[in-house]
Amino acid sequence: MDDVPRVARLRGPRKISPNDLPDLVTFADMGDPSSVIEVDRNDLQASVGANITLSEVTIESTDEPITRGIEHVLPWIPTYFEKNLRLDRSGLTGEQTVANRLSWWDFIQSSELKRNN
Image 1 (cartoon, rainbow, N blue to C red):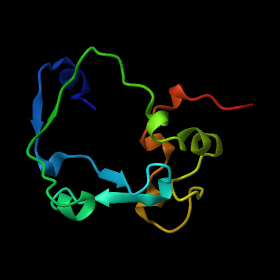
Image 2 (image 1 turned 180 degrees about the vertical axis):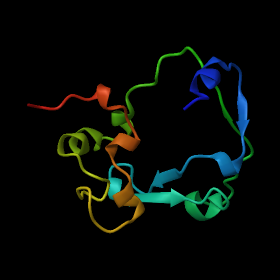
Image 3 (image 1 turned 90 degrees about the vertical axis):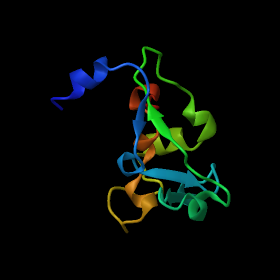
Image 4 (image 1 turned 120 degrees about the vertical axis):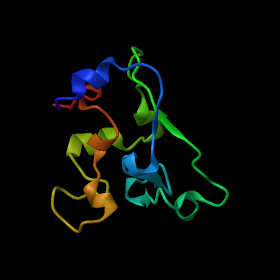
């Protein structure tokens, strides 16, 4: 946390090594959150298909606003937010699978959603 202010001031793209990437996932069916698949960053072809390679990853801090609207791509997010579900539709306990470890909050900031009360 001590580095956050320093990192926030950095500008310009910075290369990220494959070992420093966050966990990557894809969905067999974008409309079915339980179809989440963990991507092996060392073997993309096994997870996402033949002829897929990762040549370079960069990250850049900008003054641009946060991109909104992921619920249009992942339409199940509002329902999972309302019910506070993990991707396998469970609560906070259950079998430790990628679908159980991930939830709606891994894909969207909660301030974008409002509960129906």
